[in-house]
Image 1 (spheres, one colour):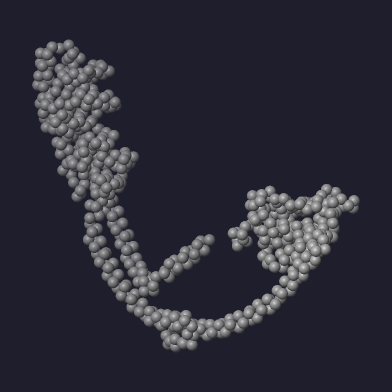
Image 2 (cartoon, rainbow, N blue to C red):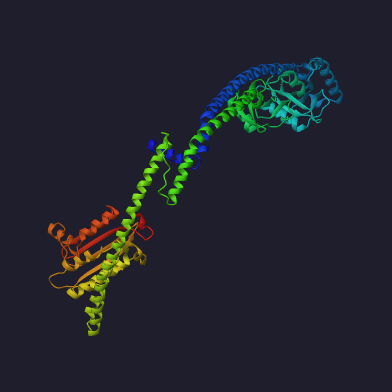
Length: 603
């Protein structure tokens, strides 16, 4: 099957090529055979080089991000250490539970005391923008900064620290002035009873200073960018204006893949409509992801010079291949043009002209010799055709003469019919009329397949003729389940031999009239015609009876012949099936495919 498929493919390809001129085919062949290897090597080298560059830059970027992750971890560790100092402060531990009962003066004194005790440690970290200490119900006992944060943001922060198993939640926050802040929130527990919650401490860090201290000075390449996102994909820190703080930047195309790979390897994705290499590193202490984006255009920028050289080489090969193809084309075009002119002369009937001998021994020279020989054979065939046409005209004249005899026979039968009618003998008149129609359909209708309606008409004519001989010894009736069945095509004279067999052999000795019934029905894709009689029947095991039934015939058309004709046309699924029971009758079923005039050509 595979060989047949390949051969068919080659034939189809050849037919497509034949639609092109030889010049174009030669050009295409030279261009394909010369350019294809160069293009293949160029593409292969480009792919391998790009893969190599990608792997190297990916490994380098991963190493850089790993070091940046360590820097960020150390930076974040300072703020966690500061939060520990604030949590264990004696003034906070002792006064936080009773802050709600203090007077305003006591509260101010407490804030001053906390500022004196912790101010030096807080201001040692230059990028801290605020430190907020809250009671369990959200009252601020200490607020170092000058910025205001909506209560809903603070509530979200305290809710986040409650859900954190490590009692440290790192989140993004925007102040009332629009400044980007990174917030560390922790729960303050009683140092004597760790199950007792006293309040919350929130340290707010300037995001711009944080990014400058950790990764802002690192460049992964032209057009690259680095940003930090939390575990939900929200941007916590970024120095690129395209990557907005507090948004989920390219969550589906980028961050979801980062979460699935979880720092295992780099991958490509579309970012802002550009193919981009993505590398990432996990910051475990904050549950953040440090993500680097390197444009694909930067990776392949070094290929531009090599691509220019390849284009020049391809153009040079294209020029040389075109010149070589044209040189070979002209060596073929001259002889082909002479052959074409010679063929045009043959087309208009100038068979006496010859193209002449060509000394070259290539295919064109052999083709010329072959055409000369073909012209000689064509002359001989033309003479033979003329002779055969004359013989055909003579035969047609003889056939026309032979047709006079059937017309003479029908005219004679017609005269006898009118003579019987004039004498008042209706039985003889009907018999002659049926015989005339039966002979007309037998002799003049040459088609092997006729409509079921015409076949039944022939059967009724035959029955009319038989009544002249056998009288009322039988009764014939025909019924179809649907009028559409009359238009179906059947082989000619398939019913008459079976009905004839019933007329000749079904009669009983007591002289009872035999009833013969022809019925038709459509079953699926088949037409079934049942011919049954209520005669004496026969024993199916009686070999002699079967032979007698199968050889009953009129004009040499027997039942066996009918079965053989049907099976020859339609196969073993169709044909005759006969069943008979002694003293009950005989039934023959003819199975035929549904055949119409439109489907006759498919048989």
